[in-house]
Length: 213
Image (cartoon, rainbow, N blue to C red):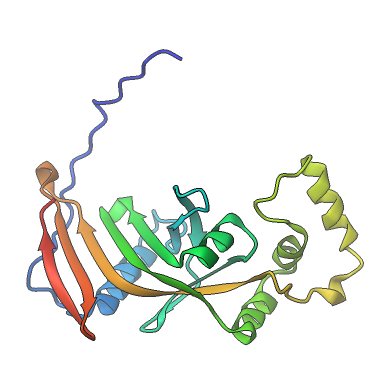
């Protein structure tokens, strides 16, 4: 492959700013405010899409896109196969990072915390609320395992066509809640002099700092 110089790709950020005197002193309230803005932006198709980074068993960080399904003062919830690479990684090291990036708003939020399994009851409730096809896929897919072909999955999917009354949540699938210890709010600004506000949980309260871009 020949060298591809893409240094000329550049965008100016000039839509909004993040003042020192924030309207919301709670990072959860500020997150909700930004999330609501993104939800009302028609250019954003999946406002709840976030990058989840874990520390894999080989010691390397690994990132992938997952969907946020609930957030509150208690934490941020997503669902997955517990036997997947991310699930196995979390079982060894619960430290994770979540990242939301909404380009049309020139906003980014980075959260750090610890991922903990939610209750079986709550996982059951969410699983049963999913479309039938999504429930079947969660049951038949050995997520992250090496398989011979696409046909392997299609055949397993067909095998469940007559088992629709048995779509019970498997014990290897469920939710995690991320207990957040830090939020970083990033707002793009002109000349790459971006605004960055960090909230860290320390001694039972949130402390706010401005970071240099």
